Length: 221
Image 1 (cartoon, one colour):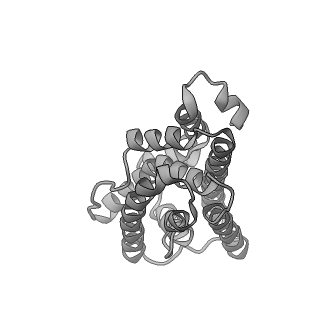
Image 2 (image 1 turned 90 degrees about the horizontal axis):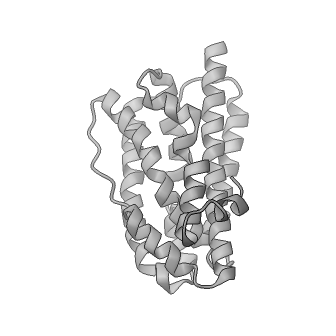
């Protein structure tokens, strides 16, 4: 979904625009995400998800911590601090799942896949460290809004492994929406914020595309 179409989708304010972007381009709308939630995916596919998520998001400092260090928006400072603490817990959950699920499944084209995820990680790092006012904030806000869909898959995996994961600790959607509208008081900052959000969603979309392609390659092998 383009930024322009999100802005004319009939939803109110910057928070409405961001919600429209997440609804259209977020993880929940990807067909492979839906396939994983149906509960019929192989453990190889589920293990691959965990390992790729670990590469993308389980490192320290994570992208929300980086955004906290680079943001110049007073309106988001407290939200980013809470989100960073909550996302640190999510990182720990990913590491726990990796330890439980076993080794990365053998997949044709592994070197190309590693390069693709490394590129996605680099793109997120650049967004989180951007000096463009509002960009890092938009990346973090969109990540928080998209993460519940990713957590759904993590919970499916934990259930298959007989593990329990605590509830989400990242700020709820209504708090995130309030911060989005507070940051968007200036047009240039709003556009930078929405750009950061749109680019973050593109990286997640690319991850699901890659996971789907890897699953298909294993099936054909």
